[in-house]
Image 1: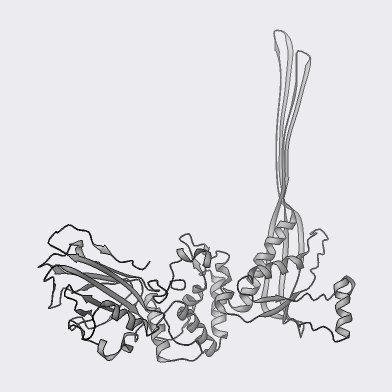
Image 2: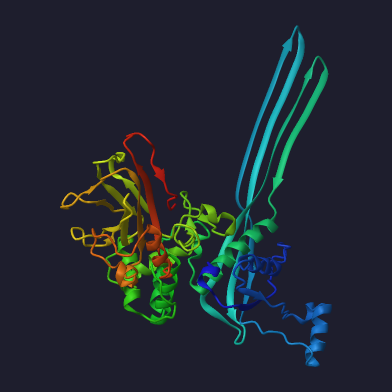
Length: 484
């Protein structure tokens, strides 16, 4: 999230954390530094300043730093913010459970006395450790309102034992089995620090931190927080936020400059349509709520998924799709197939079914066995060139008054392109056609592809098929690599 939001470098430090109980025995400040370093591993957002405020605990490095500062031989960057707080309490015996059972028996075997005793004891005691975290402005030493984290963890201690004894023919037998376990506070505090710092940083920078904790964004607490962020944000910051999210998802091809534009409004409306939000083109709260969830991806179980170089091959979102220029198929999935799976033969009719995984403008071009290249969508009978998300387009459709007929054997191919609205209007005039007329001066589908690549549109995506028409009705289709 920090990498996606492009936060500028932030210099931060931490106070030494108090432990009134004296029982935590954990250097919380060091755990906080580690957490900040881990969450900045990719974004390089947080720069921790080793700034000690307790004179009594200064070490050799701090003393030497003081000398060098006095000689103007050292320049320490002052932190912007600092973390403060405490291990607020450790409560023992918050909950306890004890179980015991004893059995005793006496008898005789062949006139000789036999006795046996068996006893079981088990108990569980739980304690609670709590950690408070706050964020303060370093220059004014004031805590930032509303930026805090208060979490607690339960520690369990318990044991179980089984004891037995008896006398058999005046021979005594005794045994004892026991198992004890105890959860230390150190590991619990590390978990509390990690969770608390995620919450603290998320609240401060306005990031959906609950997704890192696999929590539901629809929870009332998070909804109130989202509403507060939305109402406090200025219009330029909302605009920049929308541009960033839309550009990352290939809905917006313009510059991230915090300035509204007709292109941005069109992109917002397209984004809203795909997410079942009334397409107003405005950054209203439902749109903001959806956009803020785009910082991370989740898998089918709702768990947060990392999308770095190590798993880019498996990524399926627009944010990680390989562009057409880079040799991929682009951020929009374009599926195209021959309708009904009928293999083309001379004299047969071609019916195409095309489908996009998000709303976009679409153009389809057909090269016949004679070498002519024709735009088959849109066409005079299917004039609307914009396709809704997951809408199947039939070419030709049932109401069209034209057919695509195979005249002779040979190699033919169809390429369909998808891009943000307005992209195809930037093609040269020679490639602007109403459709169903051979394009003059175009010798191959590759000419169309090169002209589109020259537009340098990040949203440009492609899908296609190629096939051989022969008198043999059963040879297989020749598939082109299609987008994921």
